[in-house]
Length: 511
Ligand code: NAD
Image (cartoon, rainbow, N blue to C red; front, side, top):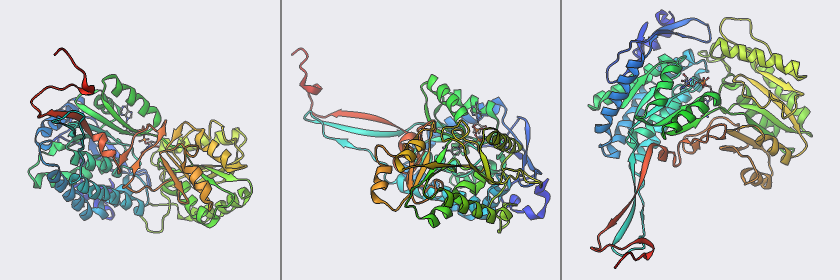
């Protein structure tokens, strides 16, 4: 086990052992199957985690619901103070937790640390929110009446997360939900179990110090069976699901069947439009990170470059040069010289191989890359494809690997049409120096995505704005802006202090 190797001593700093318990309901206890956590850079086992049985899930949900009675009654600023302390505890563990993300998920260390920083930023955001959660008073048409909008917590919520942002996505949900007064049961990806145990231990330490029940932030490591159990559970007032469109669609339908709430953050198929007047130095710099960075495993990775015909050849040839420059920097994500790590699983490598083979079959040209790398771990070459039609089924499908399709466009209007013609609607970006085109792009006939950028990559969002996408990306919004509303229920309250009954619209009923 890698955990025995002194090189990975950060694992012990996070309280991890060779055999870990993957269920926390206030106490750490699990009775499900034991799984191995694998490092994608080597294919070697890091350590073991015992997952949840159906009865363990049941205990988590019951304990969370019980804990809500205490947590939901605390003043929001008191809850904010706990979240502030969680932010501080994360700051203390920033380095080892970042290293663990790199080791278990496979992204490079600066991005892994960035992910923990994102959780810290959300704690800061949530702290402010805890002292400014709004409630409005509207003017009543009736004399001696007040009309109040009152927000209350939902109760228990379920958080199901994907492998590729194993810390940040939990943080986005958890920090905001906590100040809103909710408790949560977290079902992380079964391929990043150690990260979820380490994060929960950090949160637990803060809750314990403040005498708050641990089940305010319950953890249930498990596979899709545990996920499905959570989705069906009527006690989970909201299911916040981050993952693929295929699974998210099933989750949405199941939650709707019981009239629960869902927040869906699903797949993307993100494009950068390169206008004829684009600053190509800026574009190339952004595109390298957006297309090849994180080995193509961000929901906001650029998968399509829609390039004006006047600059098409220049962009493709310069991008190939840029890719050639990073190929020697693919490797162990924990090393400082590495720019691109591995894919996360052997299944992802298979999906990459299948897509590349299909590209060739469909008449596409592999301009760069296209091969699995001959070394231990799950490494593939970042890949540039030309020659496929804009509406080819391959181009319209999200393959979660570093493959970008370059497509020529005659003008911006066509670029916008292609941008919008895929079923997903997460992120998009336009590179231009033309102010009029910027406003067209962000206007009613511009990009139909949830994230609409100008002169920056499609990936790398900040926490202040609302994050999420339209159409098959699910429509959910998390993190900043008014996303907190997802985690609360609204009551419209009318209070009569006039001493007489007056009906709205001045309706007379009887005398
Ligand atoms: P996935 O859909 O395979 O799994 C996501 C989570 O769902 C995991 O925890 C998994 O165990 C669970 N799950 C699987 N089947 C389930 C079921 N039937 N019921 C309940 N839960 C179930 O996704 P993944 O491979 O882990 O992540 C990659 C995908 O996530 C990509 O499509 C990516 O675009 C998307 N993603 C989206 C965002 C966003 O914010 N829009 C962010 C990150 C990732």
